[in-house]
Amino acid sequence: MIHFENVGKRYASGREALSGVSFNLEKGDMAFITGPSGAGKSTLLKLIALIERPTRGTVLVDNQNTSRIPRRRIPYFRRRIGIIFQDHKLLADRSIFDNVALPLLISSLRHREVSRRVRAALDQVGLLEHEKFSPLSLSTGEQQRVGIARAIASRPALVIADEPTGNLDPDLSLEIMRLFERFNQVGVTLLIATHDIELIDKFNCRRLRLEQGRVVEMPKSNSSELLV
Amino acid sequence: MSFIYRYLALHYKNFFDALARITEQPLGNLMTIVVIGIALALPAGLKVMVNNISTMSGSWDAAADFTIYLEMTVDETSANELAQNIQQRTDVRRAILINRAQALIEFQNYSGFGEALETLQANPLPHALIISPTGGSTSDISELIMALEGMEETALVQLDTAWVDRLRSILDLVLRVVDIVTVLLGFGVIIVIGNTIRLEINNRQDEIEIIKLVGGSNGYVRRPFLYSGFWYGFGGSIVAILTIWGALGLVNSPARALAQLYDSSYRVIGLNFKETLMLVGTGALLGWAGAAIATIRHLRDADPE
Image (cartoon, rainbow over all chains, first blue to last red; front, top):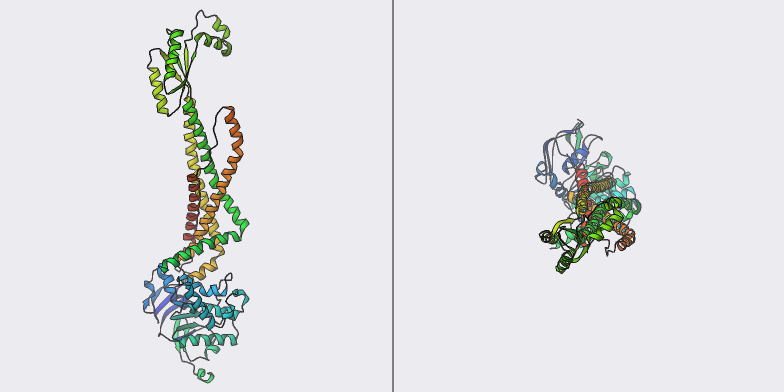
């Protein structure tokens, strides 16, 4: 699903965020990217969503070389990926329903289909009864779940999440991760950036650790079996 | 089919959402619209004024009387006959004979040369005819003048329309100035709307970012702003039309009183249907253009390198 080959990213400021990153993520996998803040986790995800372009190397997403996607095709490319942000990125002046419907309306889906998918997505994150509320009336954890509903509403095969539990307490964080696990069970490929080692110790997933701009594959944790 | 329908539905929604957003902040946006309205009303109003003056001068030109000075050898009886003959022409409304004796008395009374004229032994003035043409086009009148000049009794035809020609030239000049003002104020409208849209883009930077992150194309992001620009231009042109109507309303009754003093049935001309439509169309188009320029410039900044 995702293939990085010797990818480097140097920002205009001269800071080298990534230098020679190579890894492969199979379809249907769920993996964590860890590493201290500033290690390049966000940059790596931005390269996948074409929010940034690599300065060298090759990034393949769903067997498509992202460097061959021209600027005007980027929106259509992004519609196939669900993106979850640490700060949710919700529109405060629109209802929860409208927030989740946004990517579907952009893809000009039929209205009935939009309603159906929005309700299905909100149901999955357990916020169906809140659809008419403003995001501001929700707690941070609930807002994050709205962001997740928006990312999965268009049923993407790939979901990427940048510190989705960054602002949440351990219980809420675990809840969110369990949600991701459920998506993974129905075939969604997930790549989640987080620095919360304690949390991901509870899951038996691949771990990619970013160290000095490179990816190091870490052993899977086995503790997950103890918890489930 | 249904895709086209959904696309049109999206435009429809953007169209009225943009209007709703403008009415959300009525005071500030109304000020913008009034500024645009004044900028549009100025050239349009000037054009209406020039239209009025040229119509007025057109009627003067057609009705301009002229004078035929006859040869000194023509006596009063033949001059009288000549006047009657000329009056028979279809293109002449009236031909009046000014008797040379009568002309001399008038001249003595009104010219201020009374005493000097008294020393003359003979009357130096010829008989004269004042011709009022029926009107018609300028070429009709030139034809009439040619015919009258060709008569053997005619010494000189004096057409006192030089001042009308001068007015025409002045009007041409004014029209050119109006054109320049129109272009400049058109740019002004584009800049005002472009700047308003730029501020709106800045205010909604978060929203734009989010829409782009979830796969909104530039077209999708731009459309609401383009429709905002359209509404600003449209609203501005409505203000301009109301302004012109108001101004004409104020001018109308004194203008009619003046026309009556000159025994004219002249009525002030306003904007006709086509001109009104053109003004609205121009306003909306300028609004759209201003928004387009602002969005192209500012949305590109949000793209990845």
